[in-house]
Length: 251
Image (tube, rainbow, N blue to C red; front, top):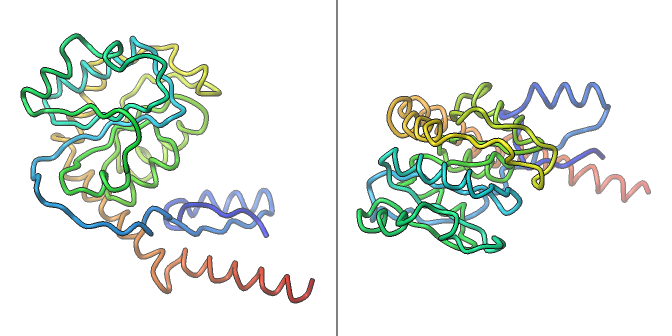
């Protein structure tokens, strides 16, 4: 019956058609699944923030973590930085001296250790950008939330996801100078400087923020329409179920 994809036709239609033509394999777009999450908008915070998260598989070395911290701090924008629980050292060892204290004192940032509900955070009205490694789940959650992405891919298909975001749909900006690796264990041999990170954050939060947010919101609307009755993902899922029923009937 083909493959089931957490995406929607309007996001990657041309690529899907090419794949089906070359392989003969049917693609069923049934996403975005993150839009199935119900949430309540909370408007207690009005200033925009960056969220920073690189997933559970991405492993930055200490030097790269320090550059990210310096870049985010130098940008002058508020942020929420999420560190996974599976780090083998204390977070404090991977951050500049006094980083957490300075950002807390100025009400400019928060470092969170462990799991957070990323989808809910991204959908909060205070979030103005998402610094991400471009894993597909993070990309789809960012699109579903209508948030511009700041892309910093590290390995495998993340670089292709970055091109879809920054070059095809123009709903994000690249940090730049990231070095491709085949797996998360090899990623990070080249350190990206803090100036590039600072510049990318400023492009999203200030310079190009208006146009990026408009395109991101337009893509979010398309994603919402896709899962509604009559939308592309709704129709795909309905057709898939009917196809499976017919297969069971006829053996």
